[in-house]
Image (tube, rainbow over all chains, first blue to last red; front, side, top):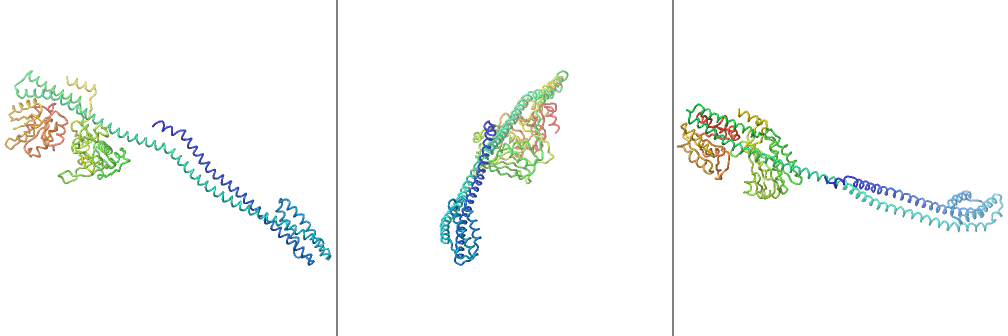
Length: 490
Length: 138
């Protein structure tokens, strides 16, 4: 894991996340704040509009009240008796004018004129009660003039209040519409901003994790391939070592065989030999036998035992497939044989080599499977075949014969690297099982490697079937060798 | 008995030849150091008239495959297989005489390979006397 990756997971990212969080909070808060402000403004506008409307209504009422008072006065003067209720008109007038308080000079004038009118009307009403008809028309002209003046003041005031109400109402409407539009636009902006910030945060958090995952995956698959190569190298070293030992053993035993053979021949050809000569010849035979025993012990080679076990082939194939990076390949898997007696460790190694190879050469398609087979010329199903297929480069006829030899690679194989040991190992493992390997490679059909093994019974738990050059080595320690040498010389 | 002994060790050929002849057997030796000789020689030799009773083979025979290509250091089992396919093993017994322990074990463990016996050239249980005892006590 490199430093850059590590650094990305510490403070700069935290700062970015905190900043992004703060921006998100501010954006959401701004929507709320603006909403509150707009609602407040709209309320104020509505209140102003309501107040203006009340004054307009009051002005209208005032106008009506004055007209009612005038009609009452005229009726009173003309008929000598009231029609209506002046007090109610006066009361209404007082209520309406109270609404218009603060309208300045006009209201003061209205108050003055109303006061004058009220006095005259009450005097007229008193006159009707006393029957003083002459007093009814006192100040009539001035009263009419007062009514007229009052109406002349109320009229414009009324118009003024109505206009003000209309203006306030329109303003409230305009403010409401503006606020709604602004809020809509701002909300959309904030939503987009939140989504953008969120995506930035997610990307910044997940980006390093994705990179880490990619690094780990590369590390894992790289190690698996490296491990496979190392296993093959080790197997090859062991095979080379064993082949060398076999040659050494043969070279040491051959002269001993001749020595013993000559001694025995002498005894056969000359049975009459006795005494020292007979004894010496027998001693030669004995020493020869001891030396062979010593050589065998010093260079002891344990025959490779297949550790056969009844194996779940689905699990075997799955286990190997999981070790190989096949994420970007179309993989066919067809295991038609559930269980078989094989050495599971060796077969895993063999399949791992075949599938790793298939992956290297595949053009995208890869397959693995197990099926039952009949040995040619037989009737019963007596073989199982492990196959691995890929749709990559074809192996030509000449290369097919050579590729199972150690160190031999196809022309395509040399391009992708490796040691050329994998298929030799596979062949070795197949032969340990008394089986065989083969390859078919055709244009448009791809390349299929097969390991064909005889079907075994479960009780065949130990196998001593090591072809030359494939056994493992168990050597004596120096002490054990010295002990044997001492005993052979006694 | 008529005996054929094939080996790439000339000293061993000499020793066995002399020992068996001394016991009254008719021995024909074949040096297998030449890759092309053994198969042709055996085929020519193994006839009805002079069919040997015993064929002794060393573990390091050189032989040819069916295409005529020399197979270096192949086990005699393949030769046996060839002989069997050509009907040359009906009354002849084949003995492995080798210093290769693994080959000896393989032959002993697998009688279907067609060997009647496997004798080591060395060791307490092997050698010329053991070979002769095996042949004469068949």
